[in-house]
Amino acid sequence: THHTPSRSSSQSPLHLPPINLLIAAVPRPVLTPPPLPQSPRFARRSSQSQSPPSRTNPPTMASFARQEHQFLAELGLAPRNPGSFACGAWGGSGPVVTTTNPSNNEVIAEVVEASMDDYEKGMSACFDAAKTWMAIPAPKRGEIVRQIGDALRAKLHHLGRLLSLEMGKILPEGIGEVQ
Image 1 (cartoon, rainbow, N blue to C red):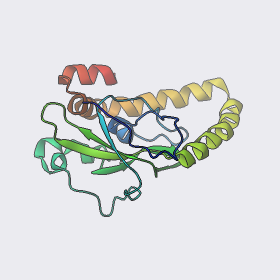
Image 2: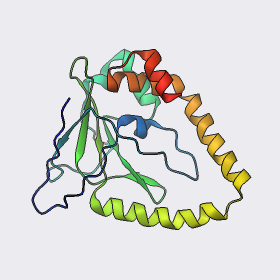
Image 3: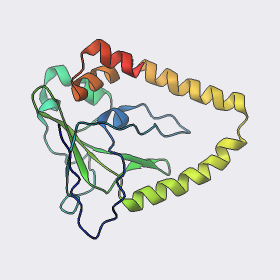
């Protein structure tokens, strides 16, 4: 699937990496946000006509209605998901990214990316958090990283299924990639 950013001429030319549903589904540890990998399976739409993410009145997506895709809700995903994490909360007011199943082009869900303002707030929070993180003794930081790994392993099969659905991989490959 090919993606092309829809940006007005007044927007910054800086292109932030897209966020995929896998990130929205990662269990959220108390002290650290999940990493932000890229996914090649996105189609973008202009954010000017889009409202911020809302879990109260989300768009209807065919994937969420299917019995075999009930695991999406179990991962905490909705038809529309916030795609940036800053200051201890999920949000996003940038372009909406629609992720599709490459085998049938069915829409899986949407993720609202970070705007440039969201990005700046997040980077500021990162610099502040880095000071706190560096003050934590290395063994305690290691324990926190281990807990993050445990949380990911607890959702291994669901995250592998999501990766398989979103990337068109066979299930063992999806699970192996998450592992």
